[in-house]
Figure (cartoon, rainbow, N blue to C red):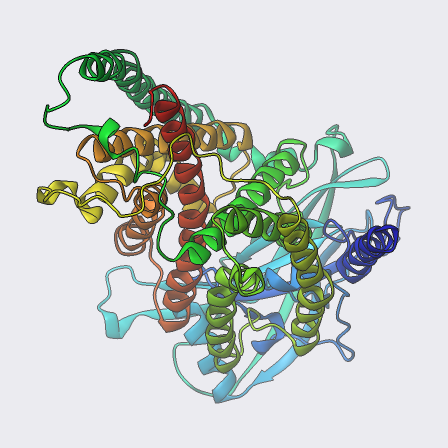
Length: 597
């Protein structure tokens, strides 16, 4: 026993050490770690990526376009989360030394071939933007513009910006803010394919400000905290709260009046003649705790759902304490990988312990199913989308080294913890608590109307939770699949709690109606009804893509629908677990309150 505990402790230590050595907990900082400079000091400036403004997943390396390239392109070492985010930082050719003004500095003179001009024109047509980081501060702008005024499509003029102007604000020895402007009077016409010479210029202007260094990131989060945005968020919460109150009142009526009447009726029936016709949920007490079909799959779904629920709670905790401040590059992806790996033991324990409660014998197969249930579809989706990104030569394509790191994490951390959790679940010796004995032969389920079938019930179950979150969904989508910044995590956490409560309540209500109709196969139905909100969210994806966004192209479309399918599948598992657990508590409660023969 002591050797087993020592092995578990050693595995945990190795797991944490491997994760921390691989990629750290948060995004990396600039080379000048204390962010303090003297006049004339070099301040790190990195160019990151370029891509179509409306296709956030379709980004390319900055020097894939024929800009001025330095003699030696030095890549910045990046954490795993930054690589997953598609960041590929390299040293920029611009020199923005601390408090050193520059006026019309020549970056380079370059002769553009026809192919280079065609590349720039194609980029300008697709509204390409660039992104850079200066002392860990993000800056971005468009590379050119299209002149459409009073012209037909064939007469459009395409221009490339030749000059950038950097306005930098400083406070004593620290950089506070940087803004890049393009000069509309210094343009290169790239409408026609012809060889041309171009001179790229830039200028720098330093200005002093009283803004303290600690508040320099606040301007990036202010957009989501503007009064009119907050009004919409609070309207969303009020709308959700009203939904919760109505549903709570509805359920309170069921639990306090209908159930009370049921208990009185059943007590009276027991005292009266025994030749009465049996009806209602009480008379299926011998079948309601009959173990479901495919119990290994159900246990695996509950284990994966429990892990994803734990992951979501931890992510919210980190968000509320301020880890995910705007443009903390890759912090969210890093946290997702770390926490998912370290919580795999929870999935193993929850799945195997419940499977053993249902008198399952092949717990090893159940554990393998649990490990592959979410990771399997995610891995297949990743393989397809990574291949698409490689074909497009996009920064979303993960380097081979990063893939090896992820495989090592899964092999050395996720899998061992999953197995340890499974062993702990198998040895927990928890018995399934059924208030009523199960009969030898199942009772026949009466013929039910169409609206009591699984799919109509799932539609009813998913609609209410979705209506409680759909307003907030737009802002989340605009942040994940756009350039809007989302920082109101407290409101999002409230919405998440409301979502959990509504899902649990509506599943309990539908389970009661199902049992009242003498349909005792509630196990899978409660899970499917709870998780159906994930299907509604995926339906919203289609609406958002075609009605609320300007995304286009095969790569962006496949990335959007591919990864959103994985996210909605995770929602399905997580909320299905919530619905099932709530229904199980409810069923145990009502059958414990009656006398079962």
